[in-house]
Image (cartoon, rainbow, N blue to C red; front, side):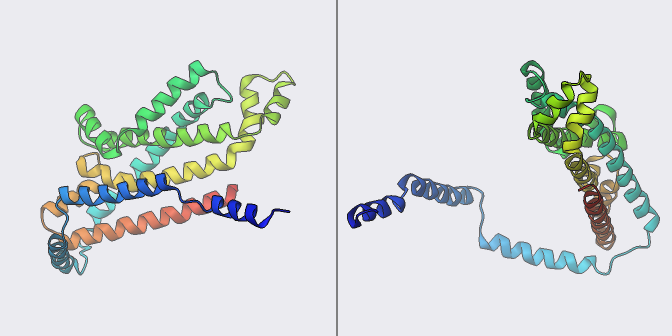
Length: 265
């Protein structure tokens, strides 16, 4: 049993102030105020922005669905871009993620695979879309290629991390039977990560559906191009109709992806 004096010393030591952490928080707060002063953040601009936003929203209502054929065509193109990009992105991410898993592959294979993943994750899909628009021209192909790159950067990383968390006992048991490497993957690795793979794939499809509306703004196909053209023409009522269609589509995709994840969990 601790004596009262020793117990007091232990209590003081347990709640001792961490001055280094406090200095770090103070430095962060000081930098926030400093960065805000450099970026010209002030209440006047915020209030002016709210006033402009009020006038903009006033011009948006009611939404105009008279050009529903143009709206439907753009949404269908965005959906096609998202599905194709998800299919090819996931198909490439599976072997890349496997090569990047350090518990299954040697270092001379994992490092190049991880460098490829890091490269794909380095840039926003809009920036990649601009590069592909310059390379292959305007249209859906540029959007598909950009979202394939984005899918590899996200899904391959998650695939690799999921494989690294598996139990190697099952893998060794399959190897002890003299099974080939493909059979080891099918019977030793895949059963342990299949549910997570399905969840990752469903999430990436949902993410590509959202991103497909953005890449169109820079000319990579989809409803984004229609939305940008409506903004340029000041057709704000048609802009609202497009935004509502995008929200409904994303919500439906979210519901379907949640159902898909629930089936395989």
